[in-house]
Length: 342
Image (tube, rainbow, N blue to C red):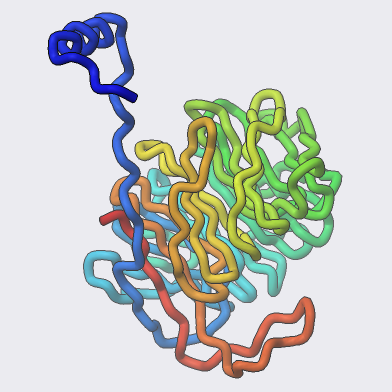
């Protein structure tokens, strides 16, 4: 293309400015692993949760929850008596935390300030994902074996409702407007639940592009859902209509998704040792793939520091395990990874 004469440059630039030309978008920061810390103890894990205000990361460790202080860079205590723990929900305004215990089908209620148990609540079969809704002061527990959600009242610590679902529930997210969205892994669907009435309002079919949705995140401002799928894509949906918006590629073995509302970025943590970073606005393209650690399939995002925390452990052998089996893990290799923008 020939260069424009100098006398045309200023008028053209001015015209573009007067026409309201959009400024160039801010560059996406480059993410990288900035810390790897090996923590003593069991090499079992599932979900992890972040308390931004308290600068803590809650790590599920099989039969206990370890509390990692981000500033001190060490474990400062543990919540015990959580057999087969899968997830941790936090209610800072109540000084309460809640763990979903698959080993004895209970939820442990504990004080965030002391990490001491307050009580236990019996829930459904194989409780897995768990989330606290400050709008209704209720805890929603996904029971993977009996396709249901136990609804616990945070004031009484009693189950007040059991919601029947059409499939196996995995991760749940809230829009802050009275709706809970939960991935139904074996039905290739996402259920929409009214958090006040506990009624199932919709079930979005994602089978056209997504196989086995596991991780789930939400952009509550744009009302978009980000579902990590086991066929190596992230299904991005309109949360109001269920319309599929995009299917960008991610790594294999996803088990968690996250969304950074300030940076407008979606994340997928994958068991193949990658963290996929996706632009959360159209055309929803992959902006970076971060090498993490094999089996680092779950994560938690701190929306204040923009750091992503993942966990994994080393395999005990270089020999691949049989199909659909997880490898034996080397003792004392449980590793907390911190991925941050630089």
